[in-house]
Length: 94
Image 1 (cartoon, rainbow, N blue to C red):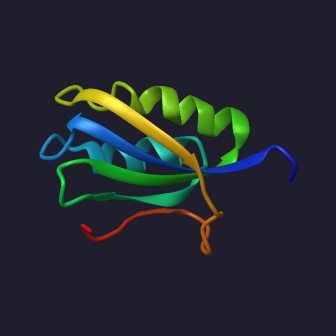
Image 2 (image 1 turned 180 degrees about the vertical axis):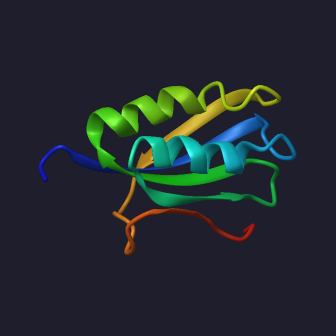
């Protein structure tokens, strides 16, 4: 599909201990995205979003706010390879 994109995203701020990963799974699923989300040892959250460009861009916009208890200070985005498996899941902290 020509409009399919895959992006790796790192979200900084108060994003751990505020249900950010669960929220990301819920939001990605609503948008029918594939990929994953995990906490990072440095306190950030990392995710891979893959799907139609418009849906991925909408997810990026949502990530800039996150769930109600989050305080996002930065969102870093870079191109990535598409995930091997369909669906969206949580991965272990890295």
